[in-house]
Length: 118
Image (cartoon, rainbow, N blue to C red; front, side):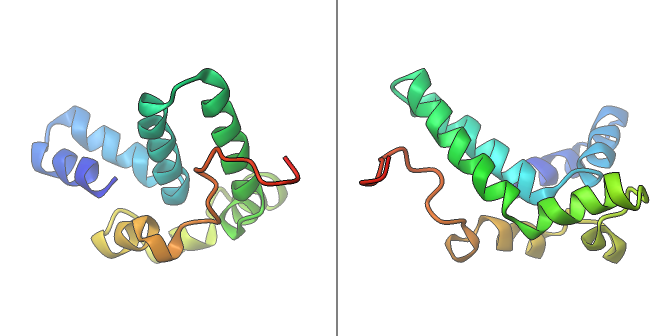
């Protein structure tokens, strides 16, 4: 995601600025997960594999603090200002680096191998 943001910043066109503005309004973790799912889908052997992966990713998202905070901001308080956004732009390199590091990855949601319980 950082590479996409950096390219938009270098571009500087009106469209690039508008796109960056829109990206700054979205969940960084959500965008990273969506991009990873899209990239994994390219190499998938079946639609079923993609759907299993997306289902597992959705379960991880629903369990995350980001999701709860997003619901609070959009539905409960209706302030449209999730806690992380109060600290400024979420497009900084350290933030994206943390989100994409293996240490911050959710529990193997991207794997399509099923465990004993299905």
